Each structure stands twice: as structure tokens, then as C-alpha cells.
Image (cartoon, rainbow, N blue to C red; front, side, top):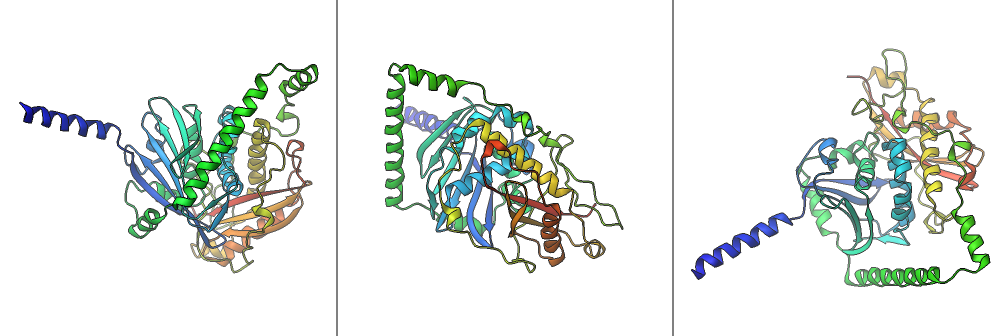
Length: 405
């Protein structure tokens, strides 16, 4: 009898473990910038899949993980890159509906990420909750069933960081052994874990103090300030015509005449598939290293839902403006040359181009050169929206040169 009970107990324990088992590793992707490895991203899913629709299924638990390779990585830079991906891979109504959640998410990123850090985003299908942890220490939670997919589309949507990046994440478990070994070797040290824990404790204490202060009876002056803060913000439509972000596109390529790159949608309602690849360094203009100034963590202004939405809409406008000026080099078409390029562009508040640097590029110099020249032809860009209150604006431009099948 005891043996039978023991076997039953083991079976129940195994069942419990299976029910709570972590999602399977669906794929890995290496992110490179300025020809340097930055981090390895991972997608975990309850079911292995090679298509976006399965991985975007809200009925199953999934996770995203980033393990940092670079010695140091600006948390703000990392966050802003993710925000750009969100802006061009989600429709306008999703951006509007998720604006407040994006403020919460953005405010989780402080200071710098360092080599070995493990940032994880977990989605609980039963509750619809997205939790964010750094080095296994919880740093935030967002209770919105649609939020996780908003983040995931930035990686596997029509305009991912690169074609290789998206393909790696959607490899249905067929990951490269060398990349997997590197990924598993990236672990935070005990001192770093303690540092993150102390940072979280400090932030929680600060939040408690703020909540206690907010609970105190407000003076007439404070009440006036609260009323002002709660007043409706000016409509973004006043300065930024809200575009249909899902419709960012450029004409399909036609032979033999030069044409713009095809931005191929995955579905009829999806956005164009502009997909850059991290390859060799450019031969047309050297990639610029990250400036120390860019590593600073101070925000241009306090983050608000309006500001995040303004940045996302403005970024989509800048991309559409750039795409109008891209020409597929005739010789590259004749030779069947295809590739992807991603550029960093800095403009002043009037839209004048101040600098262009190659972030990722193709193996063909003619395509790299055309991408740079397209940005120069596109200037001046639309002026910076007043909501952003910036003297200059930095954004990335993914460009894919692809011939029709």
C-alpha cells in the first residue's frame, strides 16, 4: 500500500512540474550594433513555432529574455530601440490603448545594463499579466492581456531589428549550438544580483514615501496643482496627424526600371516587412562609436503617455518620409543583389539632417551607399513635434532591398 501511495505521489509531483514547466526555447537571436555584439534575445513558448501567429497566441504562456553581452549598455538606449520597434510593428489603436502601459514599462529601465544581466518578460496566460524581472528579481508587472504581444511584435513583426534576428527567434527550437552555448554562459555575478536587489528595495521605499505623501490632505495650492496635472492634455492630432501605422509602405519593386524596396507584409493587414541584417561594416561611411553623451540616462522630459505616443507616431512619420526617397540601384537589381541596412539618423528640431551613421548593413556597397543617400535626399524631415520639447531627435531607419519573387 505504501509503495502504491509513493508511486501516486511521484506521479502527482511530476504532473505538477509539467503544469508549471517553463515554456520551451523557441529561438535565439544576436543583436549587433556598430559591428559589435550587444545582447542575445530569446523567445520561449509553450508550443514551438516558426510563424508569428502562433507565437502571438494569447492563450499560452510565453517569455522573452535578453542576456547582455556588451560590457555596458544604456538602459535608455535599449528601451528606446524597443519603443521604435513597437511603433512600427503595431497599429495606431494598439499604441493609443497601450500608451499608459508603455510609460510603466519604460520607467522600469534605469541606469545601465551590464554584461551577464538577464532581463526577462513573462506572460501568464491564465491571468493575462506580464511580469518583468532583472536577474530573477521582479522589477515590474503590467496587468493587461494585450501588452505582451505589443512588446513581442517589435521582435517578430514585419519590421524586426533584422531579418536574421526575427528568423532566429522563430526557429521552432532549432537553435545554433554555438549561440546557445554563449547564451547559457551569460550569467550575472553575485555582486550584480545584490546591486539590483538593493536598487529595487530603494525604489520600493521611494514609492511608499510618495504614496504616503499623496495620501496627506492636499493644501489649496497642491489641490490646484493636482487639478492642473489632471486636466486633459492637448490632442496629438493638433501637431501630428495620426497616421494609420499599419499602412507604412513603399511601392513594390518592378523590373527592369529602378524602384523602391519592397516592404512585404506578412498579412493583408500587417505592416511592411522591412528587415535589416547585421553583416559586414559599411564601405561607404564608417560606423560611429557610441558617444559618452548618448550613454547619459537623464530624460529629455518626464515620460507621459502623450510623450510616448508622440514619439511613436513621429517615428513612423519619419520612416514613411524616408521610404519615399529610396531607389533600388539598377546594377544591384541586374545582379540580383539583396540586403538590409539599418541607419542611425540625427535631425534638429526643424528636421534638418545633422548626422547619419551605419548601425547594421548589407554585404553590398551599392545598397549601403543608397541607404545613406536616401536619408540625405529625404532631408529636411518633418519638424519635431512640440510635445517632445527636443533640440534634436535621434531615430533608426531599417531599409530592406528585396527583389520580387
